[in-house]
Length: 248
Image (cartoon, rainbow, N blue to C red):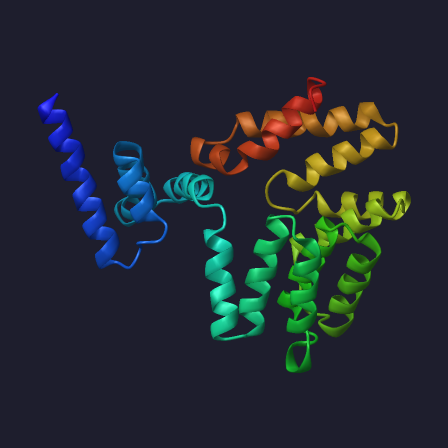
């Protein structure tokens, strides 16, 4: 027991020193001091390990841990950037975080202030705005935003923008137009999101056989992929599998 206690105290002290030296005292000092073992482990996973294991999977895992421990950290960081610089890019980043947190009205307001002056027709900002609008959801405004993007930037191509457009049409119950966009999209969209969304849309249209065919294609393709590709596509594969099993 004394050895375990001393080891815990030693790790706790090292984490506190690291937090102070790197300016990461809030909220970590409280977490480490009041939860000695759990707090120290959490600090190591979130603040120290990323520099050691800088891989995509490690970043995703650590990001999830960090979000659980301090769900407002990303919001505070992005808000600070807006207050510091006030650039359209900073506002867009904060808007995206607001949207992720369900603060859709704030996200829309931020994008409207970013899309002014020289940046009124910026394709990346318009695309981000469309993404926020489809999550709000405001499908009609999303479609208008994407039409404006295409009109002002005819050479700008985005598979994500195409998917948002299909979703905006679907959300407005423009079924024939949405189906045509999905059909055009699934042939080139990277990953499985477009195909799975299309299949779910087909189910809503009362076309279960065609939906099943699309979903079975996703599952078959996934099983033939190497592990690293499966890791990237697991979320939408899981959605496809659950829909096939009737557990959506």
